[in-house]
Image (cartoon, rainbow, N blue to C red; front, side, top):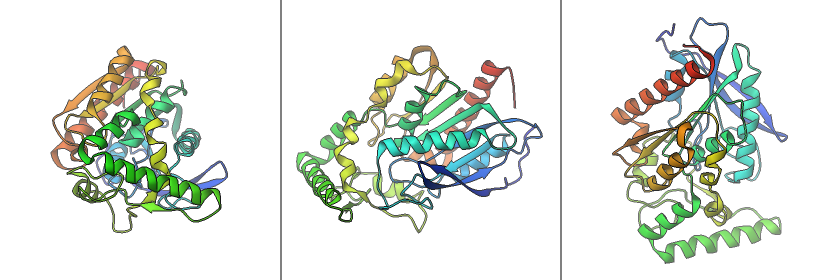
Length: 310
């Protein structure tokens, strides 16, 4: 039976390949001795401070343990250089976070749920393709096809913009090769400016969820490999139930790609579509609708997989 007071939160940490990752642990507010745990992390360049607390608080109030972590090189986690985004490292951080969650007191290690958004929406689907112990995953506005996302940038920003991004990436990679500090580019900017995301709603949408200490930058070399990251290619390997929440007006993570992935997953995927933009789902009535769908999905997944109900 879930209660509705403000959940307690603890600062915790875990090791990922020798690097300390910072996290929050929200203990379940259920009176059950063993509960499911939702593991969460943000999207491209985001930290746990960027709008994830409202989700975690709601999940904990509904009876789930919650672990919310920062990737290495970002937020309160360790690692140098700062703001370095490397897909393989972030996936390793997910694996480490899951291992950490499974050994927490009061957590049923066979009832781990992954929650991802935007870039991490692709991450949780990638991990679900390999970790057969997961009970469920949910991905809101997921970036599942880097190639399609790059084409979306080409469509709204043009070839010159992509060329400038690639040039910055090559310079940064060259600097890294000789041991120099990174060349950084902004994560978000106004249309016409140089940044990883410059769609019409990127600047206002991201700032609606960021905290004052958030750094609007990332290592430029990341743009060289983003188009190669395609979680959609792993669709048929996912065995656990997966909630795919698509923002139909998404200018960051193409909706068509997410819908295509859900169809490839067939019976394992539950597809929900919302007539909103990429950043709308984090706040207001769209947040309420999205999280309600998540909670209903998690409960169904737990009932079907274990015969349990929170």
